[in-house]
Amino acid sequence: MGTRESEKKSSLSKPPLSRKPSEKSDERIMEATSTKSADQQADKSIFEKVKFEVYGEEMISKEVKQSGNSGRVYLPPDWIGKHLKIIRID
Image (cartoon, rainbow, N blue to C red):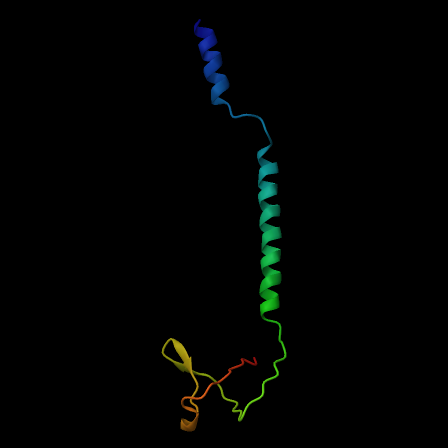
C-alpha cells in the first residue's frame, strides 16, 4: 500500500507536460513585440505634422518660456478675454 500512495504523490507533484519552457518564453516575446510595434505606430502617427487652416483676426509667433514647472507665453493685454487657438509648430 505504501508504494501506491508514493506513486500518487509523485504523479501529483509533477506539472503536466504541455510545452517546453522555451516555447512559452518565445510566445511572450512575440506578443510583446507585436504589441510594441502597434504602440510605436500609434506614437509615430501622433507626432506627424498636419496642416491646420484657421481664420482669425491677428497672429503672433512667440517662443514658450519656462515658468516653474510649466510654460508661459505673454500676449498683448487687449487679447484678454478673447478666444485663442494655439498650434505647436515644432
